[in-house]
Amino acid sequence: MPHENPPPRLTSLAHGGGCGCKIAPGVLSELLRGVPMLAAPPELLVGREASDDAAVYRINPHQAIVATTDFFMPIVDDAFDFGRIAATNALSDLYAMGATPLFALALVGMPINTLPHDTIRDILRGGEQACAEAGIVVAGGHSIDSIEPIYGLAAIGLVDPTHLKRNGDARDGDALILGKPLGIGVYSSALKKGVLDAAGYREMLDNTTRLNAVGSALARLDVVHAMTDVTGFGLLGHLLEMCRASAVAASLDTARIPLLRQAQSLLAQGCITGASTRNWASYGADVHWSDGLPDLWQPLLTDPQTSGGLLVACAADAADDIVTRFHEAGFSEAAIIGRMHSGTAEVEVG
Image (cartoon, rainbow, N blue to C red; front, top):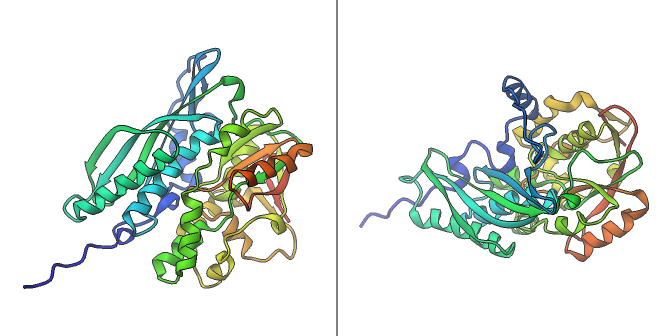
């Protein structure tokens, strides 16, 4: 009897993967420029005005609903791992606002006649497991038959408005802390090229499936002024969003920025995503580099992070304590990477 053809690799069915699928920030700004922003009710505490991580709607003086959605195409070939990564990434937006997740809805687009049903089922199982680790259920969702596989969540959370953390409340003098190392886009490119080894895959999976749940606890601290998570626009893109929303500038110290262990060597082998190049084209004019800085830092700082770390702006004298809290929560590579200072919305890299 003839053997059935093996199912296609998940990543072979997608033109991009993970948060590298995001529309470039410059293009997105141009698209939104033609969409009118209607007057919002006072209960809408956070809308789309500051490119924040989620919408927030106050329902009473002590409770506000936090709502977000995130979905993308496969970043890995293992179906269960893809589901876990996508769900973890979607929940991160809630944690970045200081919220506690309540429940999620699945967003599913699959080439139903191309992928085995068991593969699709494994993607859904992976998402369910990530939500279970966050203490919530997937309460429903919506599915369509699509050419490329797509999976993610609409996630709903709850926050006390007094503990809400926006990306626009950073202050002059704040320290900047990054919760996870950079390099996920580099690793995803290496995976597609077939040059990511087993240790690198395990490191990639460990980082992309680690819930940023520490954000809910950090949000209750008055010394934490602003938070966001680093995803498809890279560290520079999301830091610039924070600078613009807060009307301050930032400085980064590359010697202190944590990286995945193989990020630099894989980058030297040409493992770079198209999203990194598009990111730089969108916001590179607002970045200033110190003389003599190695060229590799530009693609590292624009590298799209799928399920990346929290970026926290906090009082400088509390920074060491915040880093300790990250470490105690399992983020061993969290570090102080720079500071906020007065100036126009730009980033100095040294």
